[in-house]
Amino acid sequence: MSHYQERKEKNCLNCNAEVAGKYCQVCGQENIEPKESVWVLATHFLHDMTHFDGKFFSTLKYLLFKPAFLSKEYLKGRRTSYLHPIRMYVFTSFVFFLIFFNFYQKEDALKANDEKKAPVAEVIKQINDQKKTLENTALNLDSAALKKESEKTKIKVEKLNKEIADLKKDSTKRDSIVLANSNYTIFGENWGDIQKSNSIKQYDSIQNSIPPAKRDGLFKQRIKHQLIHLKEKFKNDITAMGQAIGERFLHMFPQMLFVSLPFFAMILQLLYVRRKQLYYVNHVVFTIHLYCGTFILILASLLLGSIFEAMHINLPTYAVIAYLIILFYWYKSFRNFYSQSRRKTIFKFMVLFFLTMILMSFLFVLFFVFSAFLI
Image (cartoon, rainbow, N blue to C red; front, side, top):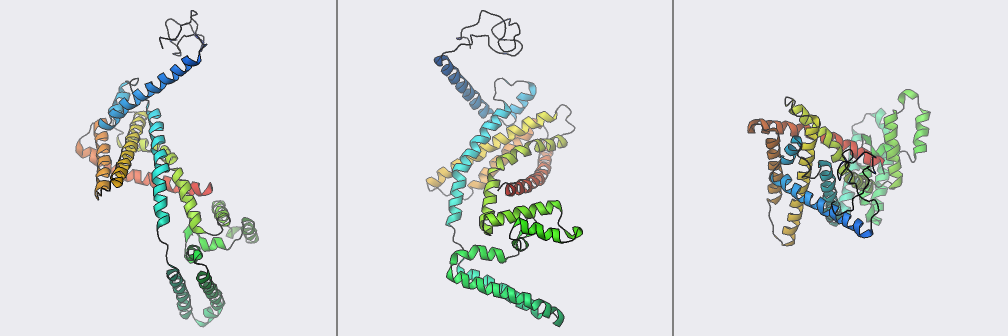
C-alpha cells in the first residue's frame, strides 16, 4: 500500500531477509513502519473489504456466465485477478447454508407442524388390526404351539386393550403408541427389542448372563447402547427422537458436502484418466467451482421462488425449469473444461451421476448414523 510510510531499514521485519524494493522478495510482506494509528488500521480494513468484494463480484460473473472459465484460468496459472477457490467455496457455502437454515428450513418446519395428525379413531383402528393379526396367528397354530403361545398372546392383547383405553382418555399419546407397536427398525435393530431394556446397565447385565458366543458384537452393542440412551432421553417417543436426529443431520449437511468434494474429484480423475495433463488438484479446483456455482444457482432459484410466492404468482413448472438450468450449467462446465464432444460429455455425465449417487448414499448413511451418536 503506497500511502503507508516506508521503513528506511532494508531488513524484512517478518523473515529478516534483505529487502531490495518496497516488498520482501522472500515472504512478500510490505516494508513499512510497524506503528499504525487507528485511522490507518481502519483504512487497511476498508481496503481489504473492498478488495475482497471487487474480486468476489468479478469472480462471480465468470463463475456463473462462463462455466469452467475460472478452472481453466487456474490451470494456466492466472490466479491473482480472481478469488481463490477455497475462499470462494467457504464464502458461498457459508452464505448458502446461513440463508437456508434461517429462512427456508424454518418455513418447512412450520408447514410440517401445521399438518394434521392422524385422528384418534384411525389410531384405534390400527391397534385393533394388530389384535386381529394376533388372533388369526393363534388360530393357525397346532395344539402344542397354541398352548405355548397363548399366554404371550393374551398379554399382548391386554396391552393393546390398555393402550386403546389410554388413547380414549389422552389423545396426545397417538403417535408414540402407533410407532411403538409397529415393526419399526432403526439402524438394523427392531425398536420393540430395544424397549425391552430399561437401561444400558440392564442390557449389559443381560449380555453378561448369556454365553459369549451368543452375545452381540462390539459394533452391535455400541448401536444398542446409543438406541437405549435415545429411548431414555426422549422418553420412548420415537417421533421426537427421529426429528432430533434429522435436525442434527441437516446441520451436518455442509460437512457432508465438503467431505464429498475430494471423492467427487477422484471420480473425475478416473473418468478422465487419459487426460495426462490434468492432475488430481485440477479436478479438485474444477469441483470446487462446480459446487460454488451450484450453491449460487440453488440459492437464486429459492429466492426467486419466494418472490413469486409473495406476489402470488403460481408457476407449476418453476422447479423443473430451475433444475434444468442447473443441469445445463453442469453440462457446459464439463464441456468447457474437458473439451470433449457432446456425446462423450453426456455419456460421462451419466456415469458420473450414477457413481455420485452411490457415493452420496454412502455418505448419507454414514453422517446420519454419526448424527444419531452425537445426541
